[in-house]
Amino acid sequence: MRFQVVYVPIGVGTYEMVSAHESFDSSTKLLKSIDESIIVPDDILLTVDAVGEFLDDKDPDLVILQNITFANAAYASEVLRRFDSPILLWTIREPIIDGTRLRSNSLTGAYSAANAICAFRGEGNFEHVFGAADEDTTKTQIAATIAAAKVKKQLTELKMSSIGHTPQGFGFGRALDAEMLSSFGVRLESIEARELINRAKGYTDEECEADLAEAKEKVVGLDAMPEQNIKDFARLYKAYKGYVEENGIGAISSRCWPDFFTEFGTPVCMVLSLLNAVNVPASCEADAYGALSMYIGTAFTNMATFFGDPVSMDEKENTITLWHCGMAACNLARKDTGACVGVHPNRKIGPVMDFGCEASKEATIFRIGRTPEGTFRFFIAEGEVLDKPKQFNGASIVVKTDDSAEKIVKETIRSGWEPHYVVIYKKIAAELEKLANMLGMEVVRY
Image (cartoon, rainbow, N blue to C red):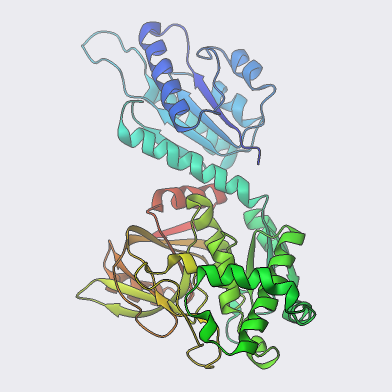
C-alpha cells in the first residue's frame, strides 16, 4: 500500500529565524522517528509560492501543517485547494518568553490556519496538536494521527465479503454495498452461504489433509470430535480459505446458524477462528459492521481481536464479560489451556472453540454502530483483560473497564447500541477517535 505523509512547515521570514530553524530541525527529527518515510522539505516554507512548489508532485494521505512562525491563512489555503486529505495542524510553543520580541507566534498562526480549514471543510474537520517536539504528548498525538490516517487509507483498499444473510432479528449487522463504500471507502461483495457449503462438499479427504494438519497444530482436542465432523470442518475451512485467497478478501461476515448445522451438519465457528488467527477478521451472525470493527482493530495492532456479546457485568469488580459460541481466534486462548475444542453450547455439535482468553494489561472495547437515523458512530472504552478462566461454554473474555462498567452497560443499552463488540488487545482509543473524526463520525468514548 502506498501511504504518503507530507510535512508542511510554514512561516514568514520577518520572525526570528534562529529559533525557527531549531524548531524545524527538532520537528523533522521527531517525525522521522515516527515514520522515516514522511516527506519533509529542505527548509521552512516562507512564502505561499514555496508551499505550492513543494506540493506540486505530492499526493498525500495526511498533511502535517505546522506553523513554525505565524503565517496568514493563504498558506493553509494553498494546501486546502490542492488536497482533500486529512490535516493535522501542529502548533508549537513559544520558544522563549523574556519580555522582548515575540519570536514565533505559532499559536496565532494556528488560528488563521484553522479558520481557513473550517471555511473549506466545515467545523472540526482536522486534527490539532499543541506542543514542542520534545514533549511526549506531542509525539503520542502525532503518531496516533498518522496511524489513523494509515488505517483510513487501508479501508479504501479493503474488499469485504458478506457470506449469507443475517438471521431474523439480527438486522443491525446488515450493510449496503453503496453505503459501505461511501462512508468507509470499503468494497463489499455478497455471496450465499450455500455457495461455500457446496464448494466444501466437493472436496475429497485427501485434498483437505494439509488444512486439517494446520488446524491440529493450532488447537487442542480436535481428535475428540466425531470423525465426520472433523472431515467436514476441514472441507469447510479449505472452502473459506480458497474463497478468501482467490478473491482478495480482507475481512468477512459469515452466516452461521442455522444453515451450517441443518444443511451441512458441522458449524463454521472454528473456521472463523482460524481465519481470525491469521488476521483475516471474520465475524459470525453475518455482522458486517462487526467484521469491519474487527478489521480496524487488527489494522491498528496487527493482532487478532475478540468478537462477542456482552453477557455479564460485575459492578464490584467493574468488569464486563463478553462471550460467543466458539469462533474466537485460537491464538487468543489462555496459554495454560490452549485453544480447546468443544461443541456448540446450544446445538451440541462441534468443533467450536471453547476457552477463556489470555490476560492483557491493555484493551479497548470497540464497535462501529449505526444510529436509528442511519448515521455511524464509534463506541470506544479502554480497560484491561483480566486473568480469568472460561466463564461459559464457548469463548469468553473478561474486561475491567477504566470507566464504570455499570455506567457503560446502562448507557449503551439506553442509547440503543448493537449487541456485538470487539475487544482489541491494546489501548488505542486516541487512534480510533482520530479515525472517526477523519471519517466524519460521532465518537462515544468511555
